[in-house]
Length: 218
Length: 225
Image 1 (tube, rainbow over the protein chains, first blue to last red):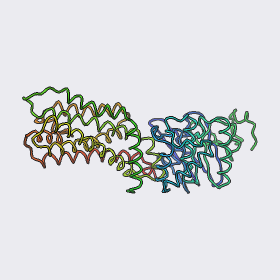
Image 2: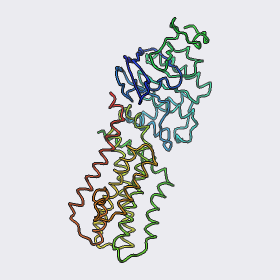
Image 3: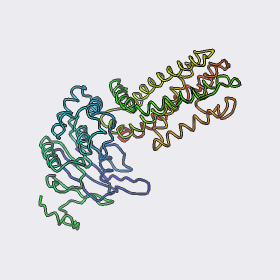
Image 4: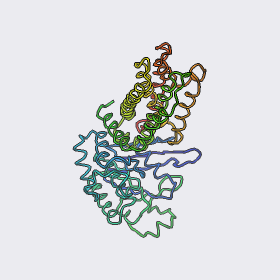
């Protein structure tokens, strides 16, 4: 569903990604972690097509759902108004977009807030709207950049239940994360270094102390 | 260009702009207050009309800048779900032009009541051209400059220099608001060639709109495959 081949990206003098390879298959959930500034969000922007690589290639298949770290929504517009606009872009009739969007929001624990303006929502609720917009077109490839920022613990756990559902539906899911408590529920955890490709968690050559400390056995 | 998507952008920004009531009120009332404060000066006929007409730029270019800057983040996401750069720009241009022309009508009515210009048709055409130019300038500034302060200052710079420079000066001929300003002078009885006035005005609208379009297009996901 997603294939990143030898992708490099530089911003000014800073090399963020250097001949980076990354593949995600249908029905696979991949969690990506790494220190700040190692290029996780850049990777997702490249995968979504928001930015282009300096070299290498990104190949995507299927409908894309992208949930950025910063929602970038309009604070004076309501949740419903956002659902309607995104729905039109996705080719959904406005009524269908509202019904579908409200259903997704209910599953994320936001009932009856459709007429609330984005600016009046808490950070966690805003993030749920962000996630709902990414799910509105029933994507086959989901790119989620720290999608649960501001979620309470219960919602965070519920979120990973949804991830299980998405896997069962055959979606390919990439989740950028710093919270590792539930990442054992991903099929694969990729750890990015500042420059270079991901190192598999159970790579025998990995000498990352954190990996030993987690003690999780996939 | 899909009309439904263009209309969706029109509605989205329509809600956003109309909910900024305080800013809109200030942007509309400031030129009116300045107009009310200008003393009668028989040595400069028509100047008050030119002044208020040019200051109307603030009322229209200001919201255009907010719309463009406010939409920058969401543009990328809308691009991912299918919106084309031309639809994003078209919806905004249509909304802001409607607001701008409505504002022109208000200003024209006030000027007609208090200044009774000799040729009101030129006043109306001048104010509408001023409105469309303001929309295009605001969209270009909002698209290309890094923040609202920079964009507002550039817009004020254009308007300020154009106001200070007299119509016969070389710099006046190089700046975008010359065309509507000359039309406003024509409303007070001065004579200029209409085609020589209108053509540069339309050219500037096309130029600023193209700058805004090219910038949106460069940032759009479609541009990145």
